[in-house]
Length: 159
Image 1 (cartoon, helix red, strand yellow):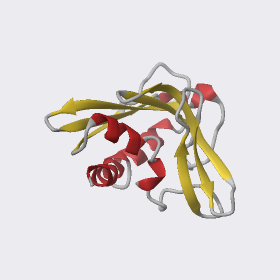
Image 2 (cartoon, rainbow, N blue to C red):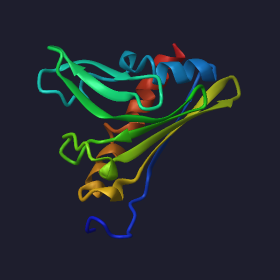
Image 3 (cartoon, rainbow, N blue to C red):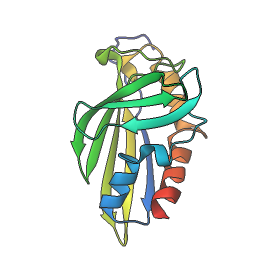
Image 4 (cartoon, rainbow, N blue to C red):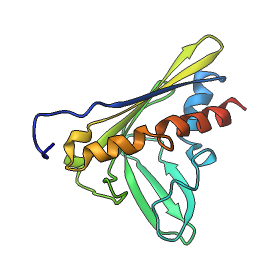
């Protein structure tokens, strides 16, 4: 696919049931993001230190390395606790930051009460906005991508 065509790349959709109320599920995913995000998913050169989602529209979604270097993965586009958070994703197919908003994909996470828990649904979309979008979609859809990350999150949020 050539960049800038009308062709679209299917969104990556993943869902997990968290054994926690919606408010806790939202809090753990967002303001306690570093408590469950794996250090293996780091893009800073000096090694993973922490990962942060600033709790407000316009806030940064970023990683801070062990020596303080920061890498902004994206921004908070919508902050609607405890129902929804929408994030821009500025990482390219080589896991480098491209700060151009027009090429960013989006990660939307919704939190819906289900039984005595919360259904957390993540949709990563808009891959066609960048030339390497199909490669990004493939990477976040496979084994170490959003599915396993949500399982890690769910185990942490449910404990």
